Length: 127
Image 1 (cartoon, rainbow, N blue to C red):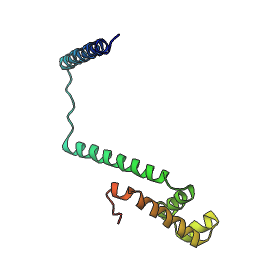
Image 2 (image 1 turned 90 degrees about the vertical axis):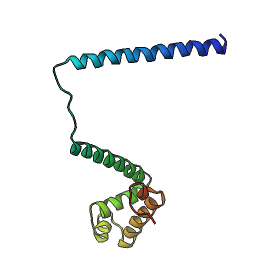
Image 3 (image 1 turned 120 degrees about the horizontal axis):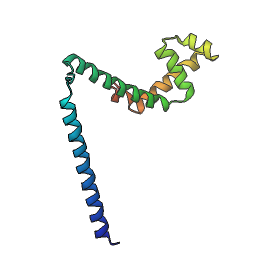
């Protein structure tokens, strides 16, 4: 089969598929209109909440990706110190390391987050 014949054949298939899609959608829309129910309309407050939720989910994804780039020790140290708000002394005791090592792990992890641009994408300051 030549290229011209094949591309023409694919064009006709694509056109038919598109037409069938819109025909099916039109029938669906007509059927929905005939139902004795009303379509719910979101309030301005609900729309704002949905937008907020989308933003939060996007930020969580960025944080998840950024945390995945840390070493397991850095992740654990940041989790305990920054998120769980444990002191360096508690961190050192829990991980059986010195407080100096605990500080270095947290600092190295935060520096790594800052360098990969994660804070900028979250709207924070990464100077």
